[in-house]
Image (tube, helix red, strand yellow):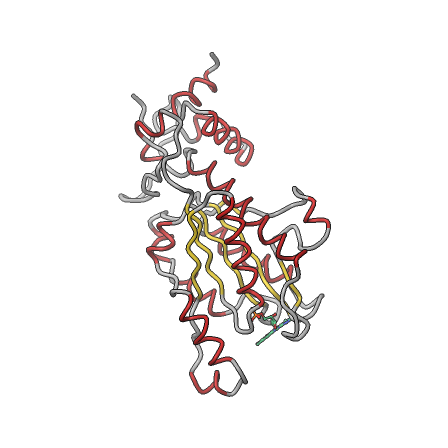
Length: 281
Ligand SMILES: Cc1cc2nc3c(=O)[nH]c(=O)nc-3n(C[C@H](O)[C@H](O)[C@H](O)COP(=O)(O)O)c2cc1C
């Protein structure tokens, strides 16, 4: 047995976790000594006490038996004013759920004054409707999740302030490394076809990188990608908020939910997500 395969057996002893190690090596191109906590030759990384993620359900007896006793946890945080991003969020949730995930859908709250909202027809009413259906995202939600998928309408070619405000509130978790190694992915809506969908999605990649999240793009790994969407995440052009996402774009969103769930499930069993919980007995 090679050292590599011994390590895989040691860490997971299951096909899923062995596959997770392969994914991890593929994603990071690291040798096992880079991430094995007590492997000979591993450099001692100096981290503050309490840094790193909590055990995430892939450890101990459960881990060693290669069993996945809990669902992969997917948090969807979106903002929407007219409903397009909401529709994408629900489709992402459906895809994640169909792939076996436990899903929380949260709507970021408005950060502007009520009088600004009231000046825009329908804004207050839509906000009240959605806020009655979706809780506000919390820090606990972010810690709970194996993956976070952010959805935003375009605002001048970039992320909406409401979503960014939630992300900016994650600084405390960032400082403790609590989001490091989780999967992250993004989707969004513009008004016009070339109104900045891709620049918006890419602008959301920036904070995900700082949080240490493993960014999950869509690529062209499923036939639905050749009909709609972008490789950066599910999208929709609402044409001045006159149309909601059609079936082709919803299919991309469902694929995103499934794909992120599969990556998160693999990462959950990898050293990325549980450095402190890996036994070396
Ligand atoms: C302040 C502001 C800036 C916007 N900037 C853009 C933009 O740069 N490009 C674009 O296509 N749409 C832009 N829009 C339109 C929204 O992104 C678009 O209507 C989107 O579909 C709304 O999604 P929702 O239905 O989830 O609210 C902007 C809207 C607002 C209020």
